[in-house]
Image 1 (cartoon, one colour):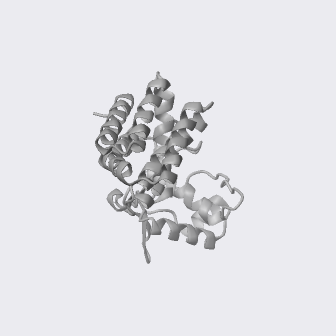
Image 2 (cartoon, rainbow, N blue to C red; image 1 turned 90 degrees about the vertical axis):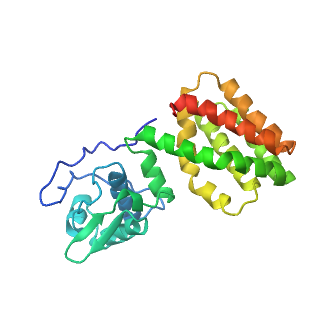
Image 3 (cartoon, helix red, strand yellow; image 1 turned 120 degrees about the horizontal axis):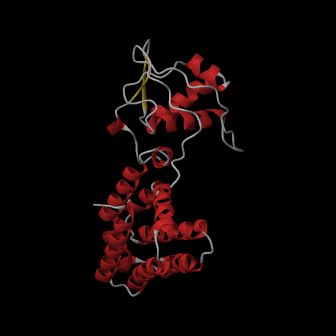
Length: 256
């Protein structure tokens, strides 16, 4: 899996608790993405991947503005965004400080995406897989009890699309839709937004697993076993089928 790092080298160690500025680079300003959101994305990625460890005092507004050739107001908005994700705190006469990792909002879509692109990709995959072990067996058992005909159509369709996919992108997209559809079919209102939040995390995991797996037909059969158990409304069989799939994934990513 690509680690998603930019070509910009990490900053060298600084003095007095500050990290020196990295060399100038152009922000990617996609259509519909504001300057401050692009800047928040760049700084946030650098924080999560470890360029600016917890406790680091970030460069001030003027320095960021000069480095990225943006306005100071854009910098302020970017910093506010990162504070909202609990990556930063800000104090007068001190500046913006990187918060301890345990305070970061790892269920934030952006933070999850930055985590997925960090150099410590193996830890990320194991973390996502642990989450799946905690959530998916019981959620799938609930889906087998509660799913509607419409929800079953969505689950079955995603499973079928996985088997018919002609590319890695198509297969992993269908794989993600399959698992999210099951979470929705569980009928638990807390699982639905949780599933949406970790969508990008699941996608990164499935891309890695699909690239590494030697037998896609076996993986497809494991998903079909889940689909069949949910369709037949057999909770115990659904739970067991998910655990079998998770064990298979554990072996691929080296989960202890």
